[in-house]
Image (cartoon, rainbow, N blue to C red; front, side, top):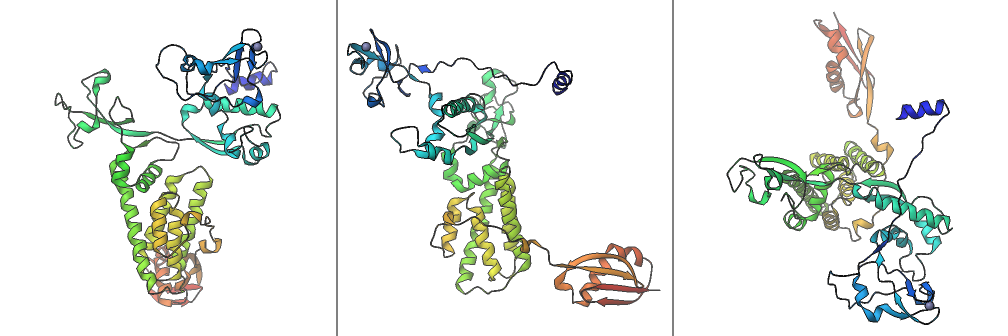
Length: 454
Ligand SMILES: [Zn+2]
């Protein structure tokens, strides 16, 4: 396609163009539940708009919904019959209501000024808050709803009511949850699906025939009987665990497979965090030293940097949770759990965890002595200095000639024996010392190790 367009443009007989297959949209519905169409039908004047002073048209609440005939409103004579606002003759209200797609095409404008009872919203407020920075929705809305929203936005813009051209700046279409599904390969049609509730996962058999079943993952649906009840799952694992699971299992735009083992994995992680922070809360009572642990501090600020970037970029929240796990492990492995850096680490872990597991983070935040909610804390910024590795370059010499170098922790830079051990493990030393007799080793603190060989 690209090549055809290039060819057409090169030969000047055509250009690329987007064609929208727009068709007329019938917006009236024979439903009770919908926005009233503010119109009165008069036998003399024809179609007359409801006067401004009489807006909004309020739907009657005592309507009988029978599911038969025309719009339920048409059966409500006391509401339908009205005098014409123009000539006063007996007239009738419009009884169809608007398609819900009408409302969903502009509801986001309303959020900017939701209490305004005169208009959609104050245009300054709307122009101030919109367009929407990040829209999250199912891919099933990618065509109609999003196109209608753009359409309505552009109409309002052309009428001078909005300053922006597009309603949404970024779109994220989230994936769906797939459930463990059992299928009897010997059956066909809808009969082949066996509800998960009737199957023993360790020995999947058709409860009717005893035939072995195939297990697969498929989009949850009633006909397949492979759904998971969110209410039951929350009761069993807690809402925080389920949030962590759903965010960790796959990037947000991908489908994710519901697997109990992975849900339990997140529950174990949150339990580890719980124990880590609880034991710190006890340590804290006997006092925190002002010691700085440079290695731990580096792990802390790497986590802040990585997780902030995961939020700012493509919402790679699964990798953000991996970073939380790394920080939690680094804290767990730290020997001195009463240092100022350890406290910084615990508070950072909770602050970064808060968007993912808001309830547990809040509870633990208060457990370590904070009065104000963790959710009103500022997001953290990383300290670039903390990210630098504390290392020196150790030069390797053989008989006074430079043969290589390696990075060693600066903490070892004054320890001659440690420097010699690092030097012996270097690839340069291994290469040049093989089969040779080392007569003498000269280690110069902060700088070099020289091997004298025969
Ligand atoms: Zn009239």
